[in-house]
Image (cartoon, rainbow, N blue to C red; front, top):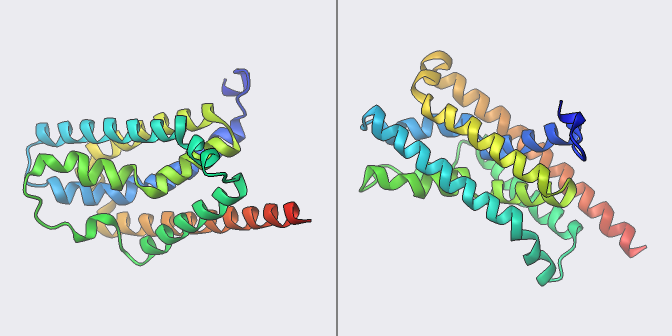
Length: 207
């Protein structure tokens, strides 16, 4: 059906949605979210999920719409961004493999519901890795793919966070952590590919 839509390439769309899913990492964030909200009622937890996903989607959409203007303003090329974005994603991929995330230092938030914006919406969901990926998707595939990828991933993330307790019971904490490690490894591999492509483009430009 998607192939029937004008200008939509299914392969490009699947790739866009997949790499943003890996960057947002709802599998890795679900146990963190559950741990930060375990003291709350189901109603409050669901409200936090909604607020977090709404803010995260707004942040990513804003960067999808105007983020590339910043690149042009500073005279940056797509190759420059691919290298810089790849380095950012590589750092996050390695950090994820080593078991570090932005939430690892959070222990006792003063106001439980305040975490809907920070750290859940940003930087956990709409952090540097996700923002860099959105800009990359727009630069390579176009704005339509970036917007669709954001919407699709926010919907997926919402359901995964809203059902984080059930997920942990099914997968187990070790299973969730193992999947998170795999996602981090994929993110690192994608980052290397971005850096390699950017360097090759710079070399072609110099020649």
